[in-house]
Length: 322
Image (tube, rainbow, N blue to C red; front, side, top):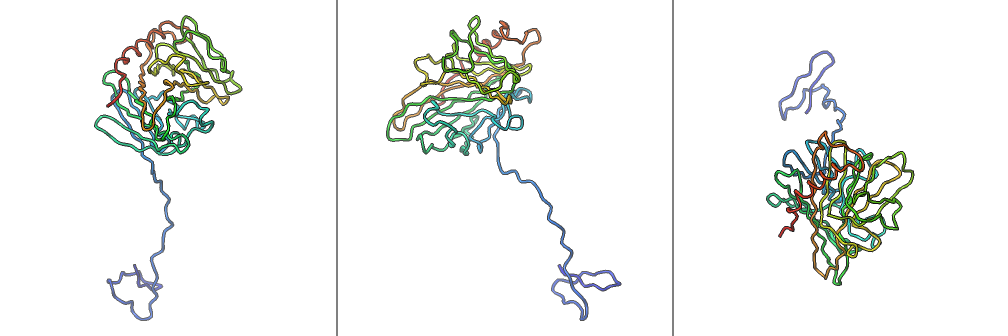
């Protein structure tokens, strides 16, 4: 917009299209500096059924970034643990891809579809392994629980063996436990043995100087974590030792020297997939506040009983979507 002006009189706006009088000086309105502003380009997806909620970030490897009860998540976020965070899905054994995990599973975006009450995420196909993955997520009414069915599909023209693997990072200083009948496997750097049929790990960041990892054969198909006064239980099909992926375990705990997180991991059966075939692996997340009359410590029979009750309460809900 143009203005007519003089040194001693106020500026007046000219009509549109008019020329300024002879002898006047014209100038543009003074430009203001551009103000910066934030643009959020990513889009997460959330599924809620009060008092629980689950949120995924499809642009960050389809990670589950939150599983919460009344707003408190039992999954460690990136803001608390930039090194490793959220819950990821990988193919097992690790020996087929070394490190890092296949980017199509772990870092690249997953496609999202909302199918009625089902949230479906689909990865790209791994260029190295020829597998793609899928997650199908739904809530379980009245159970403080969410069902996550994982799938792996073989897109190669030859058969390949694979096991499904979920890696969930939880907060430090927690208490992890699971049913077992024998000590952790010999390749474990974190050596644990069951007490009365339960293996316990109380995380003390000050006591861990180097990264440690345990591999074990779980029983009953569940694994639990105490976060403050919350009990988080993952429920899954039990896998016998002879059906586990080579050099892996049904239940895995990883502890970094940084002390920022603990990984509670479980794996499904090592399965041969024919060309075009798909395996399905159901997992259920359930969370509950721990009653005040239950002592939170390793060896607590009441804590074990609560975890067993939560697992039993959702066990019948494990199914494969068709």
